Structures are given as C-alpha cells and as structure tokens.
Amino acid sequence: SDCSHDTTVAIKTLRLERDFLHEYHELHRRDAVAMERLTASPYVMDIYGYCGQSALTELAFLEKGVDNLYRLSVSLRGNDTPYVLKSKLQIAAMTSLGVAHIHNAGLDNDGAERSGNNPPAIAHYDINPRNIIISKSGKPKINDFNVAEFLTWDPATKSQQRCGFESRLHEPWWRAPEEMILYANITGNKMIEVYPKTMLSEKVDVYSLGNTLFVLLTGMEPRGKEHKAQRFKNVSNIVAHGEYPSFGKYSNSTDPAVEAIRQAILLCLQPDPNIRTSAMEIAKRLLAALDQIK
Image (cartoon, rainbow, N blue to C red; front, side, top):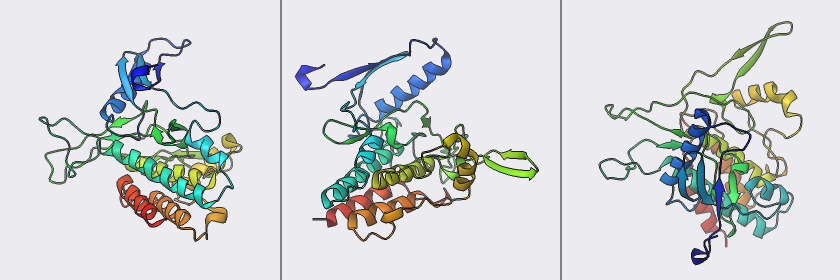
C-alpha cells in the first residue's frame, strides 16, 4: 500500500500451475503495454510497473457484490428509482468513454500524438461487464487487456486503409456478428461450420459495449445465462443473423435515462460493422442525455 498517495496496488503474477511459456508472456505483454498506453484515461485500470510475467497495477475494489460492472448490475436489477437510473446513465457514459479512449490511444509518431484523422490504435477485444471493475470511488474502469489487438493501417493510402485482424474468439455471449461461426444442418445430423472470413476492427468492441450496457440497464445477460453449452450453436446463429435482444419492461419506458441507454445499445448492436457507430459517438450521446437530466 502506498500511504503517501492513498493508493493500494496489486501484484499480478503467473499462476502457479502454469509454466513460463511464450503464449502466457505474450498475454501479459499485451495487457501491460495497453494499460501503459492508456495511463491518461480515468476509465482504464492503472499500471505502475511490468516485468516479464508480473505487473504492478491498481487494486480493484473488492467489496463483495459490486467489484465489477456485472455484479453491480445484477444487484440493481429491478431497482428503477430516478437516482439509480441516472447513476446507470453516468456509468454508461463513463464506460463508453473508456472504450473510446482505448480506440483513440496515443501513438508515438516523431513525438506527436495521434490526430483525429488517424485510424484507431487498440482494440480491447474482450469488452464485457466482468472486465469492467468498479473502483472505490464508484468509477468504472476497464481491465484485462490480455487479448488486446494493436491495430495497424497502411499510411500510403489516402484513407489510411486499416489492415484489421483475424477473428480468434467466437463466443456468442458478448461478441459481434462478424466474429460468429455459422452453424447449418445439411442432411440429417450432419452439420457444417462456416468460420468468419472478414477481418475485424475496433468495431467489435462497440458491439460488445452494447451488450455490456444492456446488462447495466436490465441486470440480465442479452443472450441468456442458463445452459450456455447446449445453446452455443443456436445463439451463435442468432447473433450472426443480427437479431437484437429483448429489452423486456424497458422496451417502452419513457424515462430519459432509460431511453438514452436503450438508444445507445441499439446503435452499438448494429449488425454491419461498416455502419456501426463509434464508441466516442456513443459517449457523446450519453453525456448529452445526462446534461438534460436534472
């Protein structure tokens, strides 16, 4: 504990049951480099040092029940007082800003910061409510950059064409349609699997942000929680075809906080990544809605 700065830190190390393999080193390297790049963001976990398989980071708030956004959202399920709904809108705006900060991380370019004309630099690639801790101050902070992608583009092209990255993970619970494996029966019990061929961009994070905000608003998982193993293929097809989750009782709510979050979710869950909005645009919309609420 750093008493002079009133800060408690955590040491993250390799699990005792794991060997020192290159794949684990690479996971920790990505985590550390991404957090170091994002030091300026108040909505990303702080890192203070890194070496090999170990890192010194900010300590997540460990009060049982509210240490991450998932548990907080579940604990607030059914609590729709004006104060709680406004608080959800605040958390939604801050979380969206965190994702925007990731996409707009600074890059070294002859000492200059990246301009607004440059393509996004980092994709978190695993945005979900369990990877967003709730700090002691109640502020959401994005964590776990182990599978982050450092994005590249072609500066020789007029539009600085993005190179994208290959889809490596396909779980349907939080991920985007362009990441899904499509399952189809051809004859009898024989099934074919069609793997995604499209190169991915930071827009997968925006879709996952929509699912995360859905949990914040409703306290429920957008694709259901029970019997995931049995439903995996069916849910993969549902996501691949761009179907939206049901908002239940929040579908027709006229509460301004609910309306703002619901509209943000729908924008995030746009099936086509080419027209899906940006995290910064979502953050701006939510902040504007927050300004309108007394």
